[in-house]
Length: 575
Image (cartoon, rainbow, N blue to C red; front, side):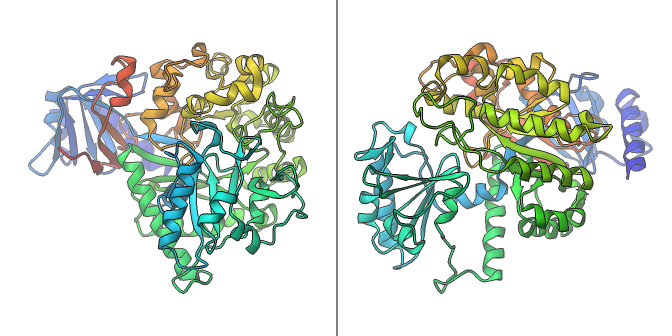
């Protein structure tokens, strides 16, 4: 495979620099050409072009309109542009792929402006549901409501109003972060949760002043609510129903990603059962975008299965499984991020350590033994320090530690002394630009000005230290839309117009690199994707606006006109 790719790159490179008219006589015409665009390759050797050609699933050549047009015949798919921006396909560096689809099959709580809005959504759903049927929702965030609910505990609502409108249906509503859930009385009763139920390790049940649970379950405590997706008969899903449900989620997620210009998706954690479905689809050539998947399972199961499931470029480079996902803390919004010092607005807590250090050390050993990258969710400064310490210890046992490209997922809040360690150790900061502007409304409350200024979403400090910083959305926590995250990355501007420590912003080209070239590097895929280079996969996005040069306030207006995966148009905007 390596030799085949190398030969193709050499031929394609020759074609790009020699006369296309001469070489075209000796080879088939291009499958597709794109003319009249502003092509930004993100390849420093040939940064721009007017046109490009595709052969098979690879980029054949770059050049002027006249040069590339000579590579076409009557069967070539020609896309005529009028100066629109052509860039490498966006690579979502951290999202939850099936979660994107699953979130589209439940109540969408993201637009709720008050707790009462959510109660009404559940009430409407309960009118349509069968008695005993679970009602699911996702996306609520107490810090984004117009007013605090009444009554509340620590700003979180109490279940009474929700329970009153859904007495016959258990309800489970996942927080926008995914690190907290809300349950009604029926769900807590089914799950045998009472005032006597103890907090699990790494989790917390929130109680009122009388000791009764209010319905809020932080981090690992979410597992206490024993919700079960039900089949058509109201019982547990059969294996066939579970598979059909997952396939539907994959279909919905794929459509959503392609509409938004995402050609590759780095999935931040799926169990082996879901990965098996991905493998089946890849074998059938049925994946319409590219997946790079982190395994998320217990150490014991991973020890038995990692070698079997390791996959590189299956299904015409649509599936790779070569990373492991773990989490060491929670999220800042639910006070779950693990901090070196207590929260400013919750002084009795420094957050939650959701997995033991010993457990993640064992995962690191498994990753080294099986040739997997290790990717650990760490948001708080204490969490990031502990993960860097674990990585440092693991790297000391091998000769090539800095070359392993292990990652910290999120790396949102760092201690000043830990910032240089990313570059020194070759650890990739897998961050999400949109989290900065989404979270900024409560970061000061949680961390205070000094900690926020020193270490909150410090892209510039990391880049200047030599670290690789990638981009994404953490969908379905946020919309998978790369344009929204790109805008946040270069502007750090909130909806109110306020900017959050704008000196930490990326330049526009740096932000594009973080979503393309550097994203590919973070997955050991820089040889096949991330830039529009002859010989690489023809994963291409066409945008209606030049996000590299247009006025900053117009970036968000850019629309995806085409999403092309392997030379095939997977999405075309309606004209």
